[in-house]
Length: 301
Image (cartoon, rainbow, N blue to C red; front, side, top):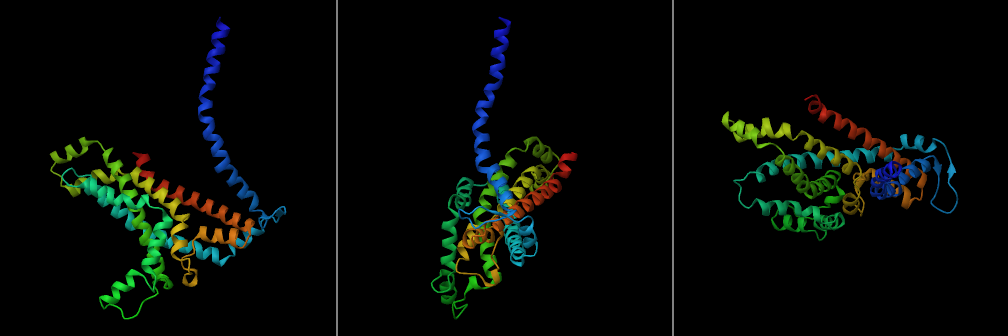
């Protein structure tokens, strides 16, 4: 009897593994295997055909460190990300504070309006912005010419600063609603006792935001920064669509666009895998740095 009971308890202990098994199967197929195969390919030369990859050792990595286009793609990616993320963070934080105030009327409508761009695909938004900025038939040039600000159409996407700024503003507009919602969820989790104590001490709304809301939101800010670094360093859709007719001096070429070009246009799969490994390492390093900096004081508290 005791043996049967022990055997039943032992079987029940393994039931839990059946529920988590599908997750690990999917993780292995779609995450772990591609990462492992990319690392394997980064040491090989392969054109993607049925011919077996040829082992080249560290040659791809040597080429990567000497590749000026890869360096340019890193600089472009960081410039576009920083110009889009800083305004996005400030705007989302400010709007979250305003729309979390119970005295604001119609806040549900404004939340919906600001979150709406998140629901639209990147390809649709990229095409929309491209046609707005098109120098021949774009709406922007037509409006400026009718108002008399310019006499001739301007090729906005053929100017380095304007092309990068267009992509940054588009990304900021697309994602600030999502960031705002995350901030609002973080604000909801702050205990109301803190604010009630602040009211008793005579604090203003700005002081409550500065000394209560912001410190309590540090984990939420960390989450937004970390996810934004991952998304920013792997951006592809919007820059690729907006600059599909070609940007001057490869000024909008991002790391993932360069990876795609190497792999699926030049059929240099081994080198594309090396770029992917470099991108993976870069994301891990910067995410770790951002997490340690932003969570340092929280962990000490």
